[in-house]
Image 1 (tube, helix red, strand yellow):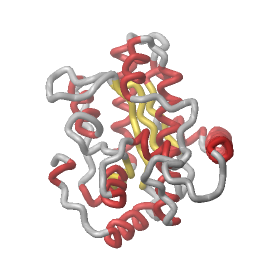
Image 2 (cartoon, rainbow, N blue to C red):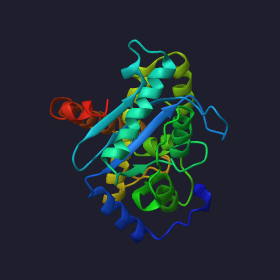
Image 3 (cartoon, rainbow, N blue to C red):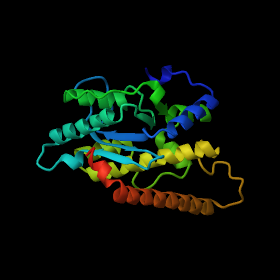
Image 4 (cartoon, rainbow, N blue to C red):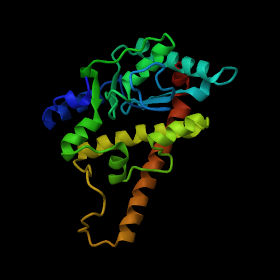
Length: 255
């Protein structure tokens, strides 16, 4: 159903659900990139990259069109990538996802599913008990809708890898798949930090420095925001290195 039709329960219920999912071995943060929004027509928008990451086990799996380009057309590479993504549901039948607005009609699981069907690949969508929409919960906490870029910006989670959806679509046409993949990865990791802020009660839902009361100058706050962003970037790099060394074997099972 459309996100707008979902009744948002109180935050205690949502907090409990989020905590329960985070404790599951088969729960992953997920994000993806495509070359446009899905409007219900066929063919659906092309998918360039899907990345999932398990905060509990530190497992990360990448389903990336660039990994299948050698000896293949772009269309065949995309088909192979989506076929590999389908194996996730076969190997993890109880998989759960923490996502940002991927239950919308024009973006998310329906779009991925529709594109897979263009290749006669049937990808299931988990039921609501195994999904957690951070966008919907942040809207509840903030009392207003916020974009993924806004929530990252407000909480010093934007970095140089972040691309908006329009740029990701343009980069698909330019075959800049590496930069798209980096963008998706940065969003997945930033979503996990959004959850940390929610759990700590420190999530910021307003434009930073709008009403400063800490005695700092604008330049000092800017430097502090950069410092926090760099710290989190280093954490992301450390996790990537850990995954590369320890989880490479597992990742190859899906790629």
